[in-house]
Amino acid sequence: MNIGKVSKRVENVLPFYVMDLMAKAKALEESGRDIVHMEVGEPDFPTPRPIIEAAQRFLELGNVRYTEAPGLLVLREKIADYYWQEYQVKVSPERIFITPGASGALTVALAALLDEGDEVLTCDPGYPCNNNIITLFGGQPVPVEIGESHGFQVTGQAIAQSWTTSTKGVMIASPSNPTGTMISRSQLEGIVKTIEERQGFLISDEIYHGLVYEQRATSALEVSDDVFVLNSFSKFFGMTGWRLGWLIVPEYAVSAANRLMQNLYISAPTHSQYAALAAFDQTTRTILHERRDEFKCRRDVLYDGLKKLGFGMADKPQGAFYIYADCRAFTEDSYNFALELLEKAGVATTPGKDFAASCPERYLRFAYTTSMERIEQGLARMAEFLKANAR
Ligand SMILES: Cc1ncc(COP(=O)(O)O)c(C=O)c1O
Image (cartoon, rainbow, N blue to C red):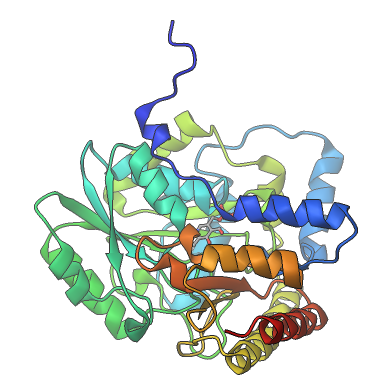
């Protein structure tokens, strides 16, 4: 018997600190307080109507069974078309796997690539699940510290400096969570070249593509065919709860991804796949582009507002729906500051501790996944709080 013991690997999996804050926010709301939520990493818009209607038509038939493990061929063909239209790259549907969210894509990619003890370079700050999932598959995450001066994004040079004999590959995300910053095409070319010279793998998380405001996002597939690209219907397409994403793998990993999909998931949720068939329709795209424009307006108001309040602001983030703000002017500890903002100002944010090993105490992540009116309310509340607590 092994009662009361979990695996060592799971012991190393860290919790989301923001969950404590969310629990406190909920308790405050139950006691009658009004909270402006800027901690939430999902769009506040409902799933576009054409997607809901496609799901309803499918559910009406009542035949909700598994699909083939890689996902519906017709959906994979639509995704292949999308890559041609958006990025002018040809991807054969055989290389595309429909997964339960980008989270499912991450597990399949890392399970396919990692052996015990393999090191993977990840961005710090970055999406925390990457390090945890690497650990779960026996790998060793190596967070590479990247500061504001590099737009919080790795370069070929930083990768070269951090590479050891145990390094197997690199994970990047552009636009990034938590910073919203992007990797330019030339920077991406430098990253791919550095990794190819060392015969490593690249996993490019492109989940925030579509939510870019000034410049277009480059897919790693435009630079090389030999990369793992993950994306999702969650963010740009507004389908977080449907749990649907995709993974594009190089030719050599098709069989591995197929076997992993069969064993880990059997298939991604069937009704969600049928719903997503409407995600690329022109009517849906029009809705999504209007929402993207609204996110851009919110970003501008929040960015200017935070700057005016005295937060240290890097260059304006070009994508996703996050601003990673330096709060050193107000505190030495962003976690306690987030608690204070919640309790005293009624504004919920996510502390840097959730995203970074280096200098987490300096930063707060603000998500503009709430209405313009609420963002303005949040800024006004913070202004009042900061005035009353001036150092
Ligand atoms: C950078 C990044 N990758 C992956 C995910 C996982 O998304 P999902 O599983 O909903 O597609 C998230 C979710 O917040 C994210 O921010």
